[in-house]
Length: 124
Image (cartoon, rainbow, N blue to C red; front, side, top):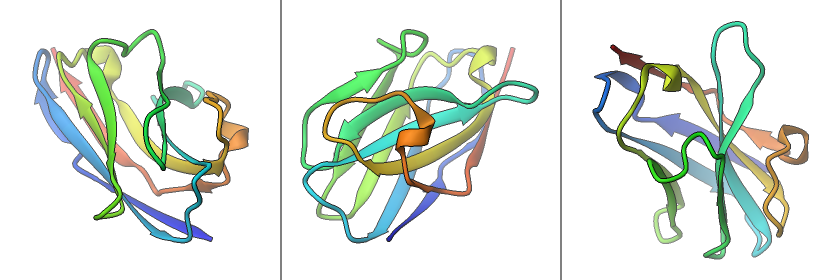
């Protein structure tokens, strides 16, 4: 079992930055992949980024590549999503997820554990 709690969401103007955090507790493995997804009102949940818990192997959606950075701090059991150059279309509830997936995957169904989400709102 893995428990995930997101934090760091809020309201920011377009062009601004936010850093989301995901606190993970429970057992993780070397092949545990941590992911960030987002869901805007009326839209399906969308992959944002992922990272292998043991290090390296990051993956990004094309819509955030070059603007967002995923990282992790194993000593603190935290996963971060640094979001720069935010746009109004980035507005969504952001979810942290975990799954036993060594290789990058953008498929939500392949992640077994989810946090409750944190709201990010970008004003124009």
